[in-house]
Length: 266
Image 1 (cartoon, rainbow, N blue to C red):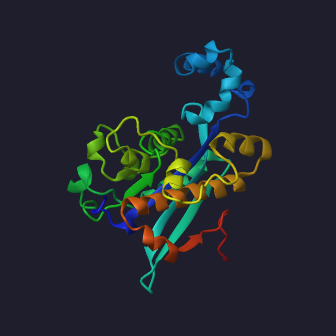
Image 2: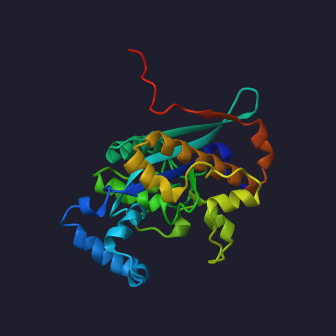
């Protein structure tokens, strides 16, 4: 599987999102009826069971219209001089979401996507790059694009999918989609997929349902960064199993770039 993909040209990505406000009460008045209508379509079952719009706002981080991105972690393999590999992680995280997206957008804009509709571009083709995320095609990639638009930022070519079919976008890899093998019932969580391959669970501290509490109540963004980077590492290890290269991991040198970034002396 994925024999055409150069491992050193894949960026493994994970994002952490939270509701855009600490509580429903702090949602702007103009947005509260919009949330109510949204819930009637997306959460009709929960409303019928007695949950309120206010209670359901804890799920606001799942939706780009009502949530925000607080952390984006990226990981990539890099060849070393001794012919081993380094896996380097870098995170963009801040209370200012637009700063997070701007930093990630500038990083991503330096790389051209692989193949597909980009093959005609002088800057793209077989030497292009890939993104890989778990459930990325249904969550991460679209969420990032929507929030970039909301922040008034340009969409980098790697995320610019406007007017194109899924098969025109071979550079957008998804470990969940690959696991399905075309089976629509093949949804699987990252911890379960890691367990199948005997990879340590990334959820040894918090899980996705706790991120909003850690952010808004604990105000511990650093803890979220650590959690996000663990997901990136786990996704990369799952990917190695897909490509039959899992034996490489014990020799991989893991480098986590400091967050917040260390200032360079003047």
